[in-house]
Amino acid sequence: MRSPKAKAYIRISLPDGSRPHCPPVYSGNHKIKPQYALVNGKPEHHPEGVYYLRYSAGGKRHWELVGSDATLVASRLNDRNYILAGGKLASEPEAEPEPIAGQVPLADSVSEYLKETRDHKGYRTFLAYRCALQSFQRLEGDKTDRTYKDEKREQREVPVCINGREMPTRTMPVERIQRKDIMSWMGELKEAKLDLRTISNRVTFLRTFMRHFKVMWPLERKDMPHPTPKPPVPYSSRELALLLEHATQDETDLVMFFLGSGAREQEVQFATWRDISFDEGLFFITEKADDELTWTPKDKEEGQIPLPEELVERLKARRLRYPHTRLIFATEDGKTNGHMLRIVKTHALRAGINCGECLDRKGRSCAAHPVCQRAILHRFRKSFAFLHSESGINVRTIQSWLRHSSLDTTLGYLSASDNKSPVIRAKVNSAFRAITAGVRNRPQVEA
Image 1: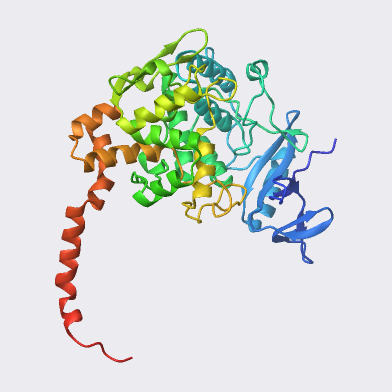
Image 2: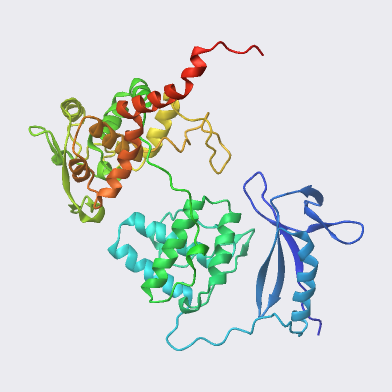
């Protein structure tokens, strides 16, 4: 009987967003031509290409990652064909032993954990853990159905298929997850061009998942991804002025509410007219638990925030325009508005405050599309802290309004305001003038 043979493929990215496995291109001396693939019978250069070996073993099709180095493909191909023919390499790992009693497949552990997360955590927390854990299960990086249209589909296993073929998955019990598995997964995420902060978040979610099952975390500190910390930057006075100048009436209400309350996105989404005290000028963060609305504040911490009089007057006028809605910023059909970020990004593009340097995954520039990474809702919260700090409000009071459990978090919000304060600016200018005094007083040398 003829032994099965492994074949080499190169995985490339096409303009339509697909990432097929294509045959590599061979030169006249029968060596692989680096980063070239046969696409519809024609050789094309793809510097992003990554090589894989495809073979069948145990009745299953396998894809073995080789990497982007074409010189490794031939030796790895020979080794794999040697193993398939019955040989054994000195470095070849032993076959995985039979599962130990009490250990369950990874997919079952993930399903159990996600069900518990959905029942006891917020829905967005559930989505974040589901995305991370399902990504770890797959062996082909970040390939997933990002949205689930119906609840029934969400409750069953959905095979991930590329070009009609089901992709391989990790099936080991959670107790057998090793360092090499996680490091390989991190490499797949980098290959998928995910942001380092996103990768760090997903690795953290996997660690929480493993600790839930009392499994030791195999990575050391040096192995963990370390994204560059991004300091909180509020909107500048110019940016806020442009936003308000180019806003519609409803957009002005939304911007001023975020800016005047310092509330988080979901706190605004689920804010009802009952949460506003027009007489006292207060906004109450309250839990919603009835047949129509179900929402819990972050860390289950309710609170109250004083609103400026100008914002209170705008809310009174808005109440007259929308007398029959329960939510302050409801959609046309009275439901919670989950598109506030998109509204602000579109508004920011129209107002001309996009930086012009951001690119999304589709390659679109924020100079012409509403994709600017600086136009985000959370910056209003930082602007809220900055404005009140500049007005002389005590930092502890700002902490209570923001509902931060740690004072360090609030101080981090205010660090940017220190650099913009008139006192700091005066000291910086004074120090620079002392250095450049001699330059200002002598004639300039001709070039």
